[in-house]
Amino acid sequence: MTQAEALTILKTGANVFLTGEPGSGKTHTINAFVAWLRDSGIEPSVTAATGIAATHVGGMTLHSWSGIGISESLSRADVDRIASKEHVARRIQKAKVLIIEEISMLSAATFEMADAVCREVRRVEKPFGGLTVILVGDFFQLPPVSRGGDIEFAYASRVWKELNPIVCYLTEQYRQDDAEFLSVLSAIRSGSVEELHYEELMARKRDPAELPPDAPKLFSHNADVDRINAAELAKLPGLVKKFRMSSKGKDTLVEGLKRGCLSPETLELKEGAAVMFTKNSPQGKFVNGTLGTVAGWDADGTPIVETREGLRVTAEPMEWQLEEQGKVRASVSQVPLRLAYAMTVHKSQGMSMDAAIIDLSKAFEYGQGYVALSRVRRISGVFLMGLNARALEVHPEILEKDRDFRASSLAARDAFADMPEAEVIEMQKKFVKALGGAWPREVAEDGTSRARVGRKGAGTLPGRLAETLSAARDAKTLSELAKNRGLTVSTVVKHLEELSEIGKLTRTDFAHLLPELHATDEIHEAFATSGVERLSPVFHALRGRYSFEIIRLVRLARH
Image (cartoon, rainbow, N blue to C red; front, side, top):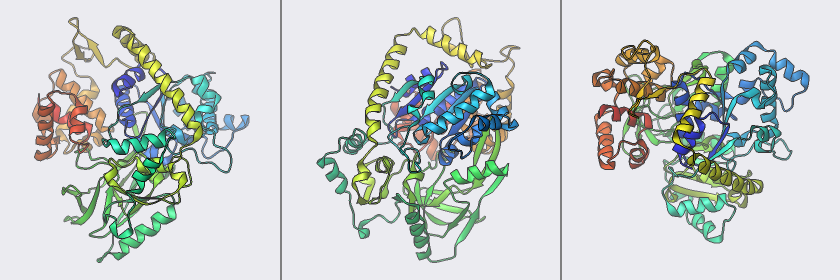
């Protein structure tokens, strides 16, 4: 299934399990769905199974959102107690669409506890109290943390069966374009690793003296990571510069953001230190996983990083936010860097890397090797320090279940392909209306679409667009615009696109938000070469150097 096909299904309001291999675009697809919901006036509740994943998506853990905390089981009295907490009840009552990221790391027990609280609060005897539920993840990746017992995945729970989500299995690949490497990853995923695959990986084994000095090392254990980062930084001459995280919001929410943030609370750097960016640049200068070296400091003492491509970037502090009901409830600010000498496989989940030194000699969990290897774009970027048998194993139960997921996805794709487009659009409109939203686009009598405008007529801008237009004229950067509006970057770019469609946006309104001239020219050239105005061909032609939002902004400037 393509991203576009999955997005069409998501917009109908069906319960969906969005899955696919690493690099297939799950995050991009769900971000597009979230942006569409917000554009329709519907604020989704975005949660994740872990703190790290929650930070990536600007939400909170499902444990915090549902009020279950670290509980391993709930009695009837426990459910009543949690449901009676005013802030939990208010949050769940207001919810309309619940998104749960990294579902593979959520146990069946936790899944059912969150469901029980939602049913109690909403007084509706349906899964999650009748909420539309979107599950996102890949069960071949890291499983739930087990405290000695057998692992029971979320899909094994009775709630999953009642939810009966439509499976959208993304089959395109955007991270790896190396056929040899893809064959190895596919063999691991299908449980069919043969001698030739093992030999291909072992051909990437290197002695310590042969390892690239600026590639991050991935380990299975925290102790190895902490030891190596501290030792490598100590080897460098000069004084340590410390950058401390600042925060806003309720303490408990801030603590969750800190735990999930890939940049440490106190970041220690020296000139010459190998670093990795931990966030995507709104201007497309770097992405989460871009590698570089601290080349110096600007006049304010901010690190200047030279990336492996030779681009020098001033790593100014950025914010990680927790949004709820369209409002920023808490935020932390830190320089978006971490030392790149080492990190755990767990913390690397969701990243894309040009190169990595990977030690799988102590791999202890199903999927650990698969997650580590699939972070890297090409096999030439894999530098192996060690490999044990467990590293190439995936959970045997998942192998059979994956075949079911793929078959269900094919059936769903065919079913929607056979539906008349008008019928699908009507389903989407009913979904938006049922949740109290406003259909974001109307169709003119001649069949062309136009942006929806305010009820007072085409000459009146909806308040959200008027506010974004005013803020865009004042903001210095795209990220500042998003911050000032309390919205995501994707949403404010969508607003600018709507303004352009109804003739209310001039180039002077946003030209100052465009990336640097060389970047703008490069994106313009990619559009010209592709011969189309679609984003994906340009994004992949530029090998992900610029975010979709930046490409959309440059596309606006072309018209």
